[in-house]
Amino acid sequence: MYSPARLVPHPRLQLSHHAPIASQPPCPDCQSERRRRCNTQSSVAVGLLCFARNERYNFWPMITLYSYPELFGVADNNGYGLKVFAFMRLAGVPFTHEHIFDASGAPRGQLPYIVDDGETIGDSEIIIAHLERKYALAIDAGLSAAQRDQNLLVTRLLDDLYWVMSYSRWKDERYFPAFRDALLREHPSLTVEGLTKAQEFNFQRYYHAGIGRYEPEAAYARGLADLAVLARLVPADGYVHGPAPTSIDTGIYGFIANIHFYAIDTPLKIFVAAQPNLLRHCLALHAAVMPG
Image (cartoon, rainbow, N blue to C red):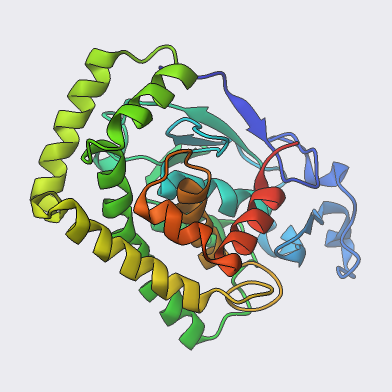
């Protein structure tokens, strides 16, 4: 079930996950003896990031991200996993990426999760909060209280959008066959029987979550309303909170990329294709976080 593990360094650095801090360029802002132990990283999100504030770390510990596999050219075909992937790339956190299908061993049985130096952390929000706190990441450091409140509201909107996106893949029989065939084509370890069982499992999830009790057009109306809010929120230039992306941009990217690059014309994809600002935002982040 595992694809080969990959070390995923920051897009503009080639760091080993155990690279000694002393081997990296010194921090120009650190004026003490600690200068020799600083690790300066150039990031599209955070500029210069000095880890002298966290002296007890003399190297990056081993961090592994476990998430669902790629599909249609994105690093994870689930919005939450892609959100964490993009966040870690933008924040300059080196990590190994393991793609898995079986979430039974994950915290609460849900992907994504990370293992950080032996500690297992699940839930995309908790993962990001953990990384920001432990490694003094500056990607959201300049946000006001009002901006952080807005981030929480958008995060909850994305939680609602998740169910409609998933419904469009597994529940709507107009689109499921193409989705199934794409998974089988890109991931030969999967079987029709296994995907049928996964579909039946998702039907139960949708029913208990509520979205499975909706007729398709009513379900899509929810998702389209969510997307309309995002289309009004994302600016024509820059990112949600200014000229540089922050964590909320990685969350939006995780979901919009899984709609835009999805090679099946669902109502969600048709809507996104008609929003130039959402497309620009998605493509800019995609270029920033994808390897190569």
